[in-house]
Image (cartoon, rainbow, N blue to C red; front, side):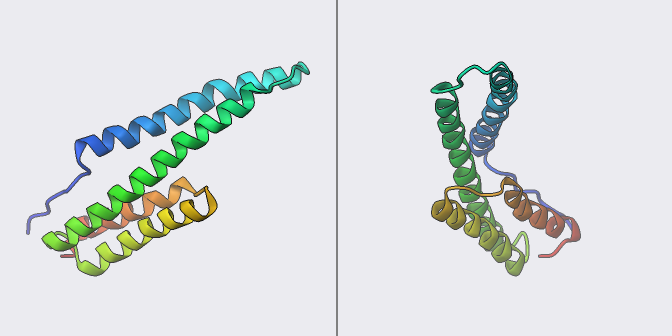
Length: 129
C-alpha cells in the first residue's frame, strides 16, 4: 500500500506562513517595547492602536487563507480518494467552522486550524482511504 502526501500548494504555504511569521515578528518586537513604555509612564497611543490594527489584519488574512486552503485540500483529498471521505468531510467542516467563527466574531483560536491537518495526517499514516 502506498501513501501519497498531498501538501498545500507552494504559494499557499508561502502566503500563510509569511503572514504568520509577520504576526510573530511584530508581536515579539512591539510587546516588549509597549511594556517598556507603559512601565515608564509614557503614552503608547496612537502607536498601540496602529499596531493592533495591523496585527488584526494580518491575523485575519492568515486565518481566512489557511482555512480556505484547508477546505480546498479536504475536497481534493476526498475527490481523489487519497483519504476516506468521512475524514475529509470532518477536516473540511472544522476549517469551515473556523471561517464562519472568524467572520461572525472577528477572532478565532489559531490552534483550531491545526486540527484538520492533524486529522488528515493521521488518515494518511493509517491508510484510511
